[in-house]
Image 1 (cartoon, helix red, strand yellow):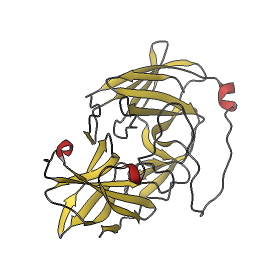
Image 2 (tube, rainbow, N blue to C red; image 1 turned 135 degrees about the vertical axis):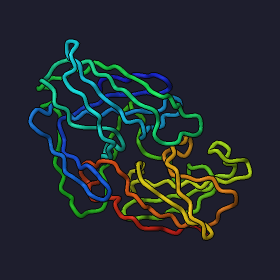
Image 3 (cartoon, helix red, strand yellow; image 1 turned 30 degrees about the vertical axis):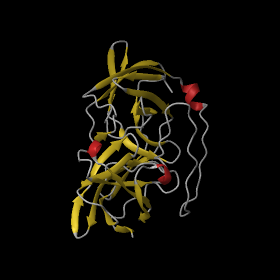
Length: 290
């Protein structure tokens, strides 16, 4: 880690490790991205809401690496899922070599709907000093795990900062639960919240929240497309980050809900580290409720 900076209700930490292999996602296709000559680091900014500790998935950081006043690299890291780190942004970065760099992390306006009092600045910039050496990188320990075809996941890493990536457990979500199901490898939890005021509705409206997540570590699955069929009507679900529900997809309804069919139309368009490269691509439905 290269410290923690705060601004405009956000906090950011800039973490790094040795260059890594990952998979880019486009629709239902993946493309393997391997380290290339000149890649020095795998850089991973993590951003969260200061007041709630909610890790943010929708801010699209842009990084600039500056050495002696000159920009030596500019990078827009990918949104990513990793088994131990959870959701973050990351990419391999080519740099001149081990040294000290001034790094700016610029964030644009939020891409998802924000509710529950989360910060929503139009833009924010953080400044870091990143120092590393070849010896430091060589000392990073790693091990190769070959459990292809087995179900399961590695345990999340423990870090003092940033806050964990896991979503609230099902019994910690507000509202009346319609149940937990699966679409492919993704766990789907659906809850109905009375009083939809903070979601743009009224006190008499209800709010249907669909919380998709990885099945073992409960990480969010952002940048997906979901819809719900309720009593013969179809509803598009809006990607939302809420102070209590966390990352989810939701819609305001003008009546009560006892059952719903949830369909994944677009798989999560996030890059994947090893272990997730074939997961969460099924576009099917699940029925939940009485």
